[in-house]
Amino acid sequence: MKLLEIRQLETGYGEKQVVFGLSLDVREGEIIALIGPNGAGKSTVLKAVCGLIPIWKGEIYFNGTPTNGSTPAQNVVRGITLAPQGNRVFADLTVMENLEIGGYPLPRKEAKERITRMLELFPILKKRARQDAGRLSGGEQQMLALARALVPKPKLLMLDEPSLGLAPNLVATVFQQIADISKEAGVAILIVEQKVREVLEMCDRVYSMKLGRVVFEGQPARLKEDGETLRDLFL
Ligand SMILES: Nc1ncnc2c1ncn2[C@@H]1O[C@H](COP(=O)(O)OP(=O)(O)OP(=O)(O)O)[C@@H](O)[C@H]1O
Ligand SMILES: [Mg+2]
Image (tube, rainbow, N blue to C red; front, side, top):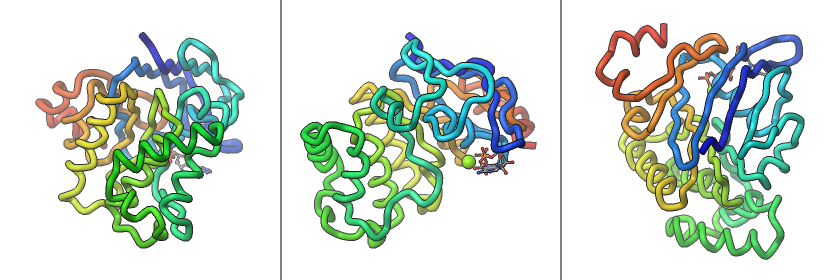
């Protein structure tokens, strides 16, 4: 069953159109990779899905219901969360306070229970719950951003370049953790990544964007075996 359905999306910033008639589906429990060169509009698509920027034209359905015009908070309650690109934690707040921000749209009691659950899932964060998030290592901050996006118990978790700033040896570990979470909790994942080879290993399907349009859609194996096509997608 389709969880997210983007139909002929057009959006952008001010006068500037960035996305031109993009369609994309995520089914329940799927891991979908969205790849493409810098400036293609990948982050913009994620922002439109969570309601951070308006939809100019087209439709976005979540669980069959149109989300056009809803606020990010309404979308969180529906089950859509985003771990944004870069600047992912509030450095001057503690680990606990960062998680509380993730629980803000939930009823208080439920937020508390979910935070406790996340601290069980990420023991490193539990140990550092009272430390300022800015003092965590890059990989630990990554984990915190992930945990924060998971607090509201999303049905769709969107990750914008989770490997950014990670030591190369940590990338595989973080990706494995993301895949495990998806499987265990049945969370669908829409992941934007520049670490293309690595993300092709973990995803069920892949979309590649160029200049605001989908230029490839299919099985990751097709790209893994075909280095030339993969290179073309980024030229
Ligand atoms: N807040 C903004 N205001 C105006 N233009 C923006 C804004 N954010 C992004 N853009 C422009 O929209 C286009 C697409 O940007 P977007 O961030 O979606 O690309 P991306 O595919 O995520 O790139 P990257 O891989 O570098 O993160 C770019 O031309 C960018 O300059
Ligand atoms: Mg981006």
